[in-house]
Amino acid sequence: MSDYTPKLKQILHEAGCYFDRPGKGDHEIWFSPITQIRFVVDSSIKSRHTANAVLKQAGLPKQF
Image (cartoon, rainbow, N blue to C red; front, top):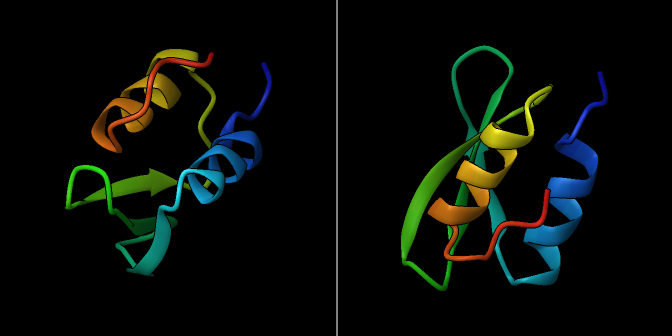
């Protein structure tokens, strides 16, 4: 299985999203200027469905 997190973070940065603060455990809290909400990004996303769900929360289309 591949790790989707590095590519996901790259897509989020390019869309203007940014790291807000650390979360619990190995999670990070990010902010999306598109949706104006904070969302969680895990440090090791193994599922393309989870990666696409993060993109949806950020207001971006599916890419995985």
